[in-house]
Image 1: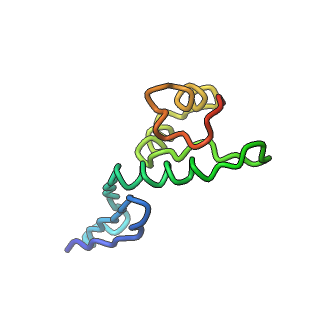
Image 2 (image 1 turned 60 degrees about the vertical axis):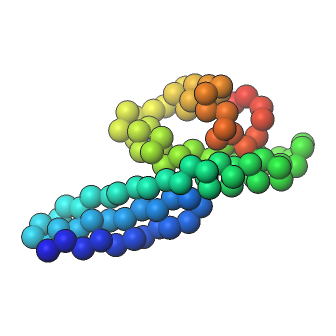
Length: 98
């Protein structure tokens, strides 16, 4: 018997745990991302940036990228490369370079 448990459904991200009770020591996580909603949230955050503030929200990284970074064991240089890549500019909140 399989059970589906939605444990996150906000900010354009829905995560569901799929548990097979014949082997409850293992489960699968299914992630759905509504990119339009995610990008709209980033746009709102970008519009609320206070110039010169001490704390800066650099970016909102998609969960799939975060999971990739864990699997590939990214270090600080890998994160800087990803964050400064013009192809990922849509995910940046703060406009400066990292």
